[in-house]
Length: 211
Image (spheres, rainbow, N blue to C red):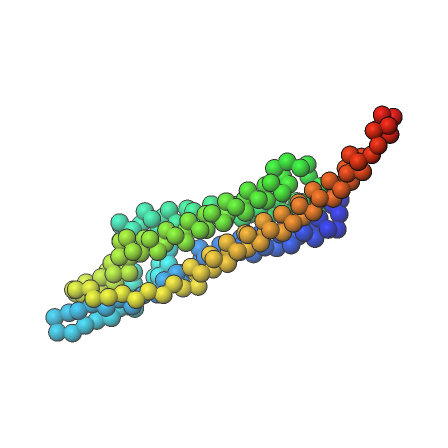
């Protein structure tokens, strides 16, 4: 059985990993990634279209259909988030295993926790970068607005506001960093204690060591 200190540290890391897993599920399930106000000029007037959309769907008066040229990036973001979800699940499994047992100090130990949490954080960061790049590169909000109203003509301006589904990813990254920090402190303390136990032998008189 692990010591109380180890169990407490890895249990804390498990909670952060579990929260990360749940939040990635929320990010994938909710569609409040972006809210946009897109303004067009018509023949005799101007029109403002309000949009709220995510990776799978969105809302406007006539519904939203993602342009084909932006679909590949959206698909890539979904795949990356699923990979992040799997990494978070594995990290949760590793921290739980270490909290209740003493696995060999191989990849099942802190090294595995560092690896999977780092990968999860990297995947989420890539998704956070790709989404706004997709919006700017393809003028996604403008294209979606035109799909809602076919009579729209000249685009004037667009105002964007990222929704909670997007900003939750920032919290996920912080949770992954927190997991790594918790395990690092445990690993560092264990290493320091091991060195202190070895020090008396290193400093012992030579005639004693000979026996």
